[in-house]
Length: 276
Image (tube, rainbow, N blue to C red; front, side, top):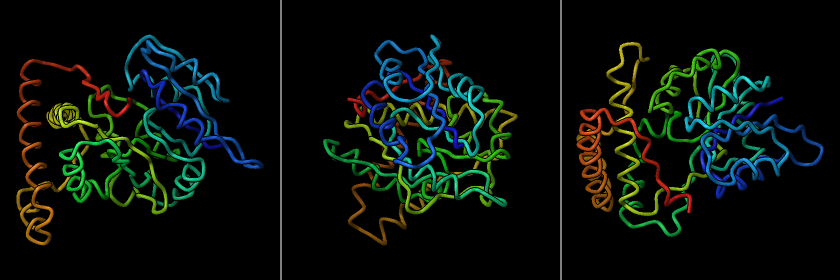
């Protein structure tokens, strides 16, 4: 049986979409789904219980601890870890599980970004971000990762870091992971540029902390170099506005991250606009 762990912190708006999408079709084997409602002050746990899933509640608002709790409560493999604010279908879960084997120990879906109601600057940013080599090929930023038992051994320590997504992705060498064509995780982007910047500062802060850790895995970059951006704009001049927005956002995120590191700020600045 395929196991699915869903860490959910105040996800009462988006969680019903995910749980409905994970429902098994008639005559198909059900998934073993556990929702870990962590530090919730809304109806996340009650909504989860209204579906045919196992629910764990913890007062601690920690995604890493929620992943560890859910991980210990299920036995199925392959196993998926799915953020509570994304949507992936039952069929795509099965496709991801089927992509594992031989040397491939981790799989992720393609991304789908609904842009309805999203600010122009945010659209421009994501137009460039999605073209970065690391973004196309690595498993971070997808909200979903599927592992076999070998891959699970890489993760089960569940180190408490801000950039858990990056740490998990970097736990697998390029030949050990795959992005599965024909699958998609629906990820709702920030609706405003202010919220996008909050999200990027958080990511840059976590990445900087992870990079300074002595026991981190080998980190592979996204490819967002100045040379890459110049070549991208040169090949497609229509992308120049997006390149400028992307570059400026990157600078602002690094400045914000440096300030957060100096302050020792480890707060999780969550984007709420994508959840409204």
